Image (cartoon, rainbow, N blue to C red; front, side, top):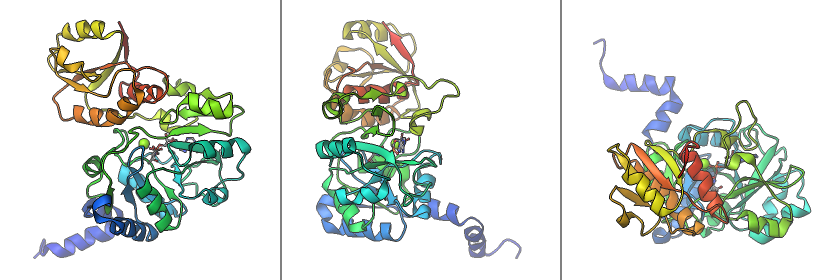
Length: 366
Ligand code: TXA
Ligand code: MG
């Protein structure tokens, strides 16, 4: 008598821990945007209007979206990802007219950036308006806004009727997701819906630039390169934290910079030098479970296991492959990964920024 029946026990759990119950027992539906047409967009909008979270495709990476004005909805993003609460979310719009109510004011240089690069992979940080809850801005008085280029993302924002707060749709600390399969891997059972639109075309997250500093400053490099930004703005700074470890006790301009990021389970080292020196180096390693992360066509020249991530000197192709390459490391038994060092210019800087973090700033110079 004492321990039966089972059902009341479940009800007790449901009452005591409602959020736990919801987060862990949800069925996650996947709808293909191209195949199922407007159905996915309507279903996503319906859930978003009800204060739910939905994983949506963008041209950069998949985003985990919620109504940016609704603190309770935004809270669900943080819970599903296991994201630290002081890490602000980017707010996504589909129309330029949505921007002005999100920020205190839009200076001329911001407008020039939007005209040049929106819709596209650029997030512009300005002082936030009172409409943006602190939960969305991670407690900061600024907000990053971006108008994505992906037609499905734009259609979902339009149908939801509100700007959408969306970080990358991955478990906090893991590489961002560039396919619906990767979203499902990380978020299955934690969110109600994933809209599948195949592989993201850019592959790394948007460039984040702040205009609240004296000189515009890139906090995170991405698909819009520093060179492209300079053409519009003139002088542009790149934050020290883009390629360097944050000094002990220093305040991160972008809170995301201080957290462990993009890390596979294996230890990663970035190796600087020619392919020939890289080959001699990895082939001389005595450990058994090593893996080489190399450029296209290089793997077959090595006698160690390898994964390839785009063409040498071609940042865009590396960006597109990088996160799925980092994720597939976890499917091998590799304990140590040695990665080829990308070029620093153009989109290469974005690739290097993600790789130095995946490698926890562990760089070997040959
Ligand atoms: O491409 C992208 O930007 C994707 C897609 C979904 O749009 N989103 C994305 O969001 O990458 P998330 O949250 O994973 O990365 C946003 C980064 C974080 O490092 C965060 O700290 C920083 O941007 N960030 C956002 N708002 C900021 C703000 N107001 N001030 C400083 N940094 C900010
Ligand atoms: Mg992220």
